[in-house]
Length: 117
Image (cartoon, rainbow, N blue to C red; front, side, top):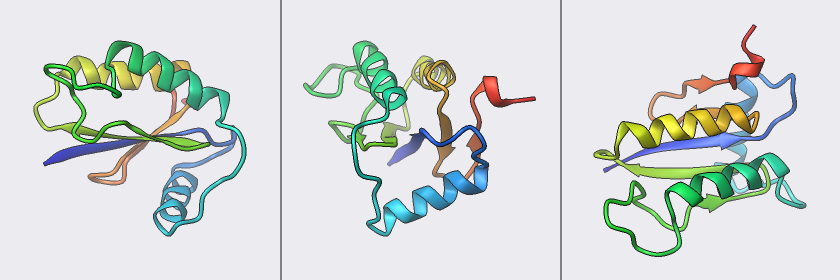
């Protein structure tokens, strides 16, 4: 069983409903085209520097590798037993890269701290 999180690079005015709608479009096969958003590229590089996804690693937090990276999002399937430090790193990096975080288990969207008023 896995615990799935997605980080999204949407416009500054994006709401949790916008994030859920973008995810639904992705699930239906509609994908943004173009270059990978710099925020997504930076997040992925920073995250996988700490928790590699290309080669098998002992105690890897990932159940599916490599991570799914698209132009505007990264899908991460984490093992139920992954360390809290991994989740904390994902949350911290999402904030540092101005990404919104979608918890697929319950549909909760967490805006980056910079967007919380």
